[in-house]
Length: 168
Image 1 (cartoon, one colour):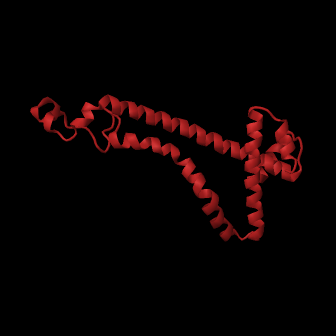
Image 2 (cartoon, rainbow, N blue to C red; image 1 turned 45 degrees about the vertical axis):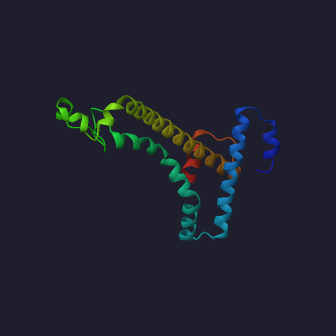
Image 3 (cartoon, rainbow, N blue to C red; image 1 turned 90 degrees about the horizontal axis):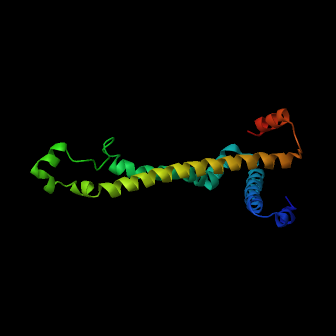
């Protein structure tokens, strides 16, 4: 941990960026372990503190893909699901009542609403991928941190499996 500045200076490109974020993540892990030691392993107090400090942020980050679902819930997926605002009854479109219908603006802006629906789906899929990649990155760094802390070097597959099983 102490030689990170020297290690960071030798890196270039994406590996330098990885080293920078690895240092930030390791700093957070050190902070968590220091707080745990100060709380003297009091389970109830430490869980409450960690959920308040780190858990809420991670939960909100994990829920960002649901923002893409707001638009389909409001306007629906045309012809499949009506949504909250819904579509007019089919009798309105054929009769003369269509001009006085309160939901006429949905039909007038149907193309725009469809485009925004597609954009919200794309946003959801991208955010799901980002959330999974960030969580995967954090799990990899947890294993690496524990490995450094335990003083383990290169390990074969069986040793690595046992080590990961002990960590989690």
